[in-house]
Length: 345
Ligand code: MRU
Image (cartoon, rainbow, N blue to C red; front, top):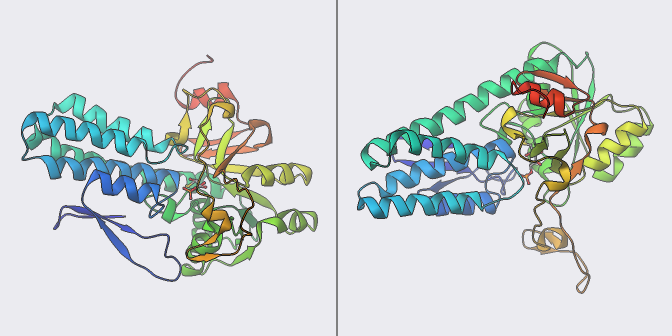
């Protein structure tokens, strides 16, 4: 994502077109930004949060010459639209809460508020990169030379403001001089692994082997995976993790084969207000994503289709959460609350 200060609008790399085409789209209203999030122009929990923050900033600029009451109601509608764009990644509401706190602190005078909201969006963006660098540094210590790391979906630069979470750990280990190879699950049905993770790794000459998701158990049983690192869309207070559909399957397989399973995520992905994974809203996406891809359809007409976009991995299957504050081994509510300086509930 890039903010065009010369134009006053946001540009997003259209991730739906990768790896075939590198094309940026322009977004100059909150409604357009919410549509871009919903339609997966941009995706990945931290990237969704940063984008939503820019959505508020761009709307405040767009509305700033209106009557005060119209400005206030327009900005309120922007918060609502953006909040509704996708349900599972908690970074979205986390970023919107930060933007709202600016509104509460500064007041709603547009001339003062609009530039202040933009500054906050920039801060959320820049902090995300710094956070991912810290996650990378902590996580890299877990990777020995020649480690073969299985990852799922895309938790890379594309899914964040930069560097990535799970892929950030891999990048940081490579920067530290280790030889790391990546096994990327293609991540049906939207193919974030095949299209995005493989693309990111190829761009940086990090060896990557793409597999069909269904191959993971076979590779593990042959000793071809040393550890699994994935990202997260929401971590509940008890350590349960919602991430891309298929993550739970990998965690069960990793436990079966005694392969360490780590989740790399910033604190902004941890939702202390959600007690356990059972309470995390799971997005259902269109059946067309299962039936085919783009204009191509391969599924049989008449079959009922079910397309949950995320699943929940119970905390007991997670070896550790790799956060910007360090690695939390065998995460549970007490350890997670301690990250936020809170005692046991
Ligand atoms: O549907 P998506 O592509 O937004 O799902 C993304 C994921 O599940 C990622 O693994 C998660 O957001 C972590 S991104 C750092």
